[in-house]
Image 1: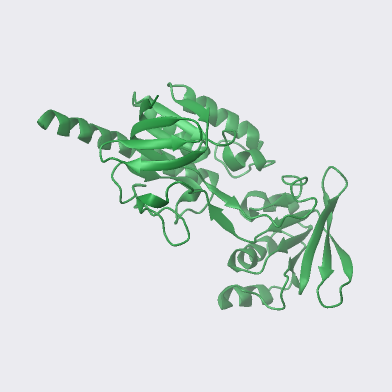
Image 2 (image 1 turned 135 degrees about the vertical axis):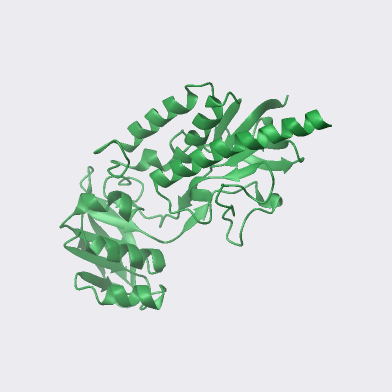
Length: 313
């Protein structure tokens, strides 16, 4: 049986929950669908220190507060993995692994996933020394030794950012040259406290069961293992949008990111995108909340226009 709502939100991270808050306050029926627990990547963040109104707050605690706000005015939440979204014009069908929904508006808030390197210790120490966000977590390692894994633009640019906070930053790269832009490379090479560990493959992230203490690497030339001592490991080997099931809508770029205008609207009327899944997102909690607020406000006018059309007809 198809369940009908005014708004279906795919994803329940900060962007999705904010959109749900705005839409439900406008007396619209709202369903949030997420394949994981609400909060998204906030649940993997030990502390958040750059979100307004809090000097510091645990990521899961911030997720709980946002969830309470998002459901306060009647928005609902359910587990589910979206398999397909079908545009019928004034309505959309959302097909999950075990349910089907109909909505006037769909908000894509499914976020993005940082690629993992898949070594022992990576998942164990996530949030306890392993991070995928320098802006989020860099301040926790002020004046310490930091390791950045990767050789592309993100790795090199974030290493330069971290160098302003850390005592030393070591970029570990599996090749003998970087893939980052020349500008990013020059900035890193010119920074005194950035070192490079070339031709190294990360074998393991080691720790004392509470926090990271080092990174075990293998020299691909000499075949010798060594350990780089550190309490902070920042991994930048790529990030992928969570846009499975949206391919048929024509709203994605060549890499799978959702294209929107400044009002979070895609080129398909009634389909919006907010947060990290957008092509132009800066991937910060506060920015995601802003996206959600814009979409949650704008969509009311769109739904009203559907009603006006029905009256005229």
